[in-house]
Image 1 (cartoon, rainbow, N blue to C red):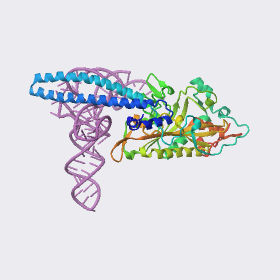
Image 2: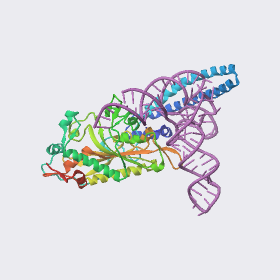
Image 3: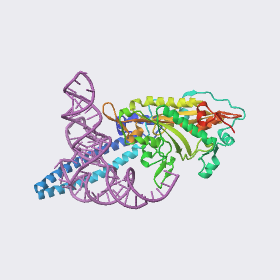
Image 4: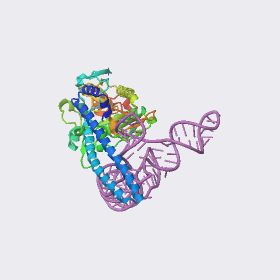
Length: 424
RNA sequence: GGAGAGAUGGCAGAGCGGUCGAAUGCGGCGGUCUUGAAAACCGUUGAGGUGUAAGCCUCCGGGGGUUCGAAUCCCUCUCUCUCCGCCA
């Protein structure tokens, strides 16, 4: 959520930024500023009346002590009149505040100045492309066929147990998955990230604080009986560790990593996009999150990008890094880099990580602050990224490394998997 | 699931319905002393809103109520702890 004072300071600039993000309702900016004016007015009227009531109450107290009952009674009726007025104003104020918040929540984060202008994924800027696309042997097939051939994932039984999009990993397929999780976590913790295993369901306050609510209500599975949401990413529970927390500067940067399953309803889409592991309702992901001082957040973003990039290099996968254009960025992000790996049999790029700087958009809702060197309270900046999402990595590893005699795994996985390849 | 206790400032922990934004201790910051440090002593130290400022207002788990006046009384919700039961 944006801070109102940002809109007040320079509404024209805010509107211009919102347009970069392809946000249509720039009129909201003026609405919000004007509502905030109303809020201030109502607030100060209310405060003034309260101040009078407070003084009178004290006087009444004094009078009672001195035994001046009649005078006290007179003041009491005066107070009663004020209180009626206050009740009125307070109700108005409450309505204004609610309306203000309802509107404010609709505004996406403002894109940083670096964000390329554009509206579709085609407008994203290819920052870097690296690694060589493998030349596959003649009989090479997409991962969904390899999965069958080596008996790694059983989609049909997963569908029987739950529904489509809930894969059942099996045997070596399950072990490969576990190896990847283990490796990613080790890689992240070695870089100084503290490992967490968070709750996989969150309450409404948490979902709201990281911006899943109200924006993406329909994307999450909702356990209505207890009013919990299944997490769509570990970002939600882990970032919420710092909800309502005041950090000391020496505690920063906060660096956290967590493995979790991710549950997404993902309405729509079909066909090649959802074939095999390309898009599923439950998948596994390892997330990295940092909470840092505002002036450092863009350097940290670059660090995180490099961190993920090295991981892809270790996995020996061809990848590219995209700087997302305004129209393709997420609601809460100020700048996002997407990572895609090339999956050779499908001959397409698959998104495997998204690294974003949210600046103070999340921390404003989280109320995650710190005291700066001057002792001033400030919102911290939050960032996160996947390191990494598993299914598509899994798919690309299978496809790119297939040979007539099995799937050859990258060296870093050998000790985790207990073998250097998957054979039938 | 049953019974009881509790929720107060960064932490610990007081708080007859008005003098409480809140004692005290620890911690933090500043100072005295010291070659330096420790100890000791003195001072200072919550957040938010509004305002140029002085000030004013709000906040003692959340919500509601009683009262001229609530951290303090009542109702309710949530959470935590202890005991019992059940259980991976």
